[in-house]
Image (tube, rainbow, N blue to C red; front, side):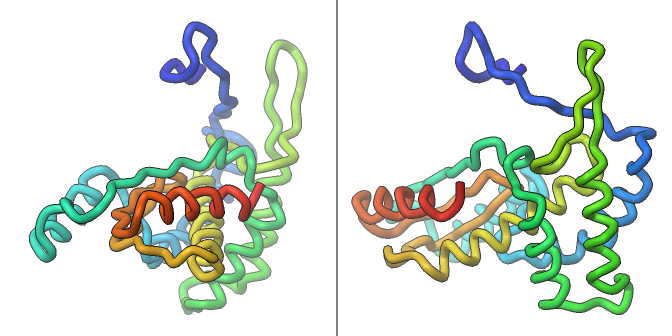
Length: 200
């Protein structure tokens, strides 16, 4: 249960452990192939310490955030909402953008990823379920796939925005976005409304 939301009846979220599952080793392998592409994303944030270092460096270079509005954006149920074919589009995009001699051909990586995503089964109260949308939260490659999906989505958002994007800093930890907005509150609200129309 997500105990920090909507008490006294918090919503549930299925997190299935992939430990010792049939696709665990393949998932770890694919994750090693995708990690360099995730780290190369302009918005990538590794962890809290990394984010604090980014903010400290920004503050040292440009001064206090007094001219900016601090904004956080969260994607609703990212892992379980990503259409599986769009995972492949994002992986293909970033692998072709920066080919690596240490990585297998794109089609092999996509075939392995599809196998992992399309074979997520779990049992709950005696029933066996097959996850047909999104990525399982408990498989090792899930964060990398989600990061690449979001990386491509945010590129489209920023490129096609009808509102002039006035974000001085745009950083993201998987589906949690942090930005410093230098424009008006009205433009920010319009930009956020636009974001919510880009993808279901």
